[in-house]
Length: 268
Ligand SMILES: Nc1ncnc2c1ncn2[C@@H]1O[C@H](COP(=O)(O)OP(=O)(O)OP(=O)(O)O)[C@@H](O)[C@H]1O
Picture 1 (tube, rainbow, N blue to C red):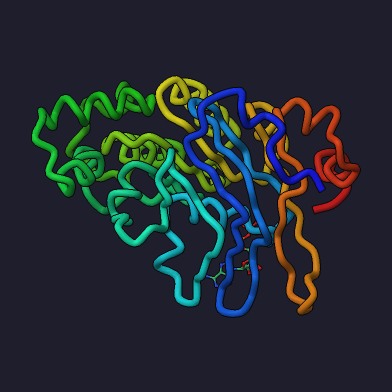
Picture 2: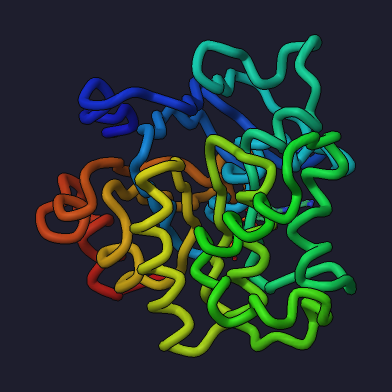
């Protein structure tokens, strides 16, 4: 099975999973995952429901720590740092590795306070107005909200709310942005705006996106990892990495037949 990245050495690696197994209680959700995430690239995680895409994404910023029964073995590295080492502060991990969720989830606060929330929490000492403006500009939202920064974030449209969540993620100056189906609750035009925005953001950030939308993965990502799920020895269903390569290879000439079947819509 083709589980190691054939493209690992082409660019700097910012995240690396090595022989990662993830359990919820005694259930093994992910089996022996090894893959590298390249700097300033967009990496898409695709595969049928239940193959563990979101689980893996949450391992990358230790969001699974909060889930009862969660256990991982193997390693996750952020640059050279073992993310699960005892000295690592998960709060600092989540500042450097931000997350944008499927459903836009602004706080019930003003647009300004949504963006300023994270920086205040980490004791940002610079010019907050400037940081808010810059973050909203980077999230391609500034033009639409600059005259109503004191209005509630919840009064924005779904697509605007999602860009506000991206601005909120950017405001703490992360290195990596994880996106869990960030456009699946949005209309097609808002979806394309998010995809355009991702192309802008990758100049400065590394992006990992979980998506169910094959067109989105093929349009928006540089690299694609395809996961599948199959019955394990105990009868549970574990996710595993089938193939990982440049996106055009995964979509046009994958090595594994099962990848071909999935990307052409024959299952999942
Ligand atoms: N908090 C949890 N507790 C127990 N099991 C969980 C938990 N979260 C996920 N699982 C299980 O782990 C497996 C992987 O789930 P995960 O959500 O990571 O898959 P996914 O590929 O993202 O699925 P989908 O595409 O449907 O969102 C599934 O069998 C799921 O039921």
